Image 1 (tube, rainbow over the protein chains, first blue to last red):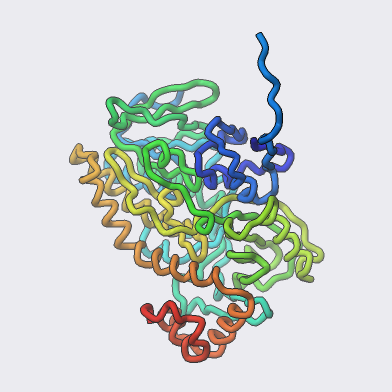
Image 2: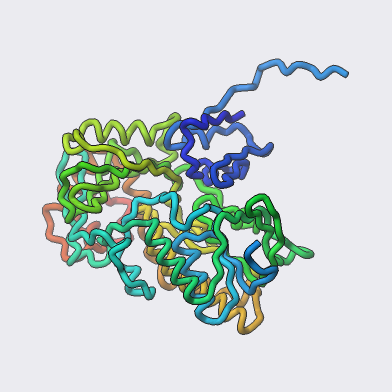
Length: 67
Length: 397
């Protein structure tokens, strides 16, 4: 998943246009990620100021949901 | 809300392309709404603010001192070794231009749109494209917590690099990493520069792109960088490369940063098709940015005029079919397409050259007196000294 550092984000939309899955929407100063994100990491490289990072989730154990 | 339920034309995006399209549509009789998601037209600036003089030949724009702040006499392109070529405005004509204040420029163009009769809605986001049985019927907008459907016969997507209108209406605007750049710029003050020149630095100081210094005066300049996404390996490289450039240049020793600007810029070939039934794309949304320079204002405004005029013709004919809208497709391509493809080829070549080859290029170009800067003349000059540099471009000579 992609993690946003709001302290660095310039709300410029470079990540939005670089996203091949259209998984990012910039509404004024709010950056929304939707479920279409494929963790490709292009937005991380496209961000001019390093506000995005890719958190590796593969291999992590997701706790089972118990009723 | 402050606007009506229905318009002939809704233009999404209040940048230069959108305002110009709205202006010429309204001037020619269309009922137009121009929607801008930001709370202020022109702000925040996301631009290097260099503009070619070409724009004034095509569109009725009168430079005024609120935004036309520095007309330069030449552009200097510095190779990695520090040698440079000077592109004289007198020879390169409209390629060398002026440095403007984009926030005021955008307001000027929006004002012209309003004067022509267009309505403008700021702090208004388009959240969906509405359809009825597949046919576009308008847009859904959100403003100050309220949502509303506004109908339109024609929607113009002028919503920039990250265009949602293009994607929602089925255009493939996905960019290859080699056709996308990551950009950062500082507006710096307390400088002591020669304001007659815009400066460009190519080579490994900015992989796949360049560093620019666009002076607004002796004291103030935009200092920025664009990097090709395919050459970027990790996060924050645009910032790191720009900071390193500034750190290593004595001219910036006492300078301060007044504003930081960032953004993505496409350096692709234009879209093969920018119209469909009831929809037209213009400007960055249609990938009309010059792929060699990354400049988008002139092309957007020039195409925006054609777009607005055709929108008004469509309203008069009450024909909003893709077939009718080919008038726009044909019109803007006649004005811009050849140069866009030529510059795309040039960019593809340039980004493949290392520092040694770029220095050779600068050396050859500074040695010959180029009467005009045609691609052909430049390539011929290079071939005479370094034929291996232009081998794969023989057919262009």
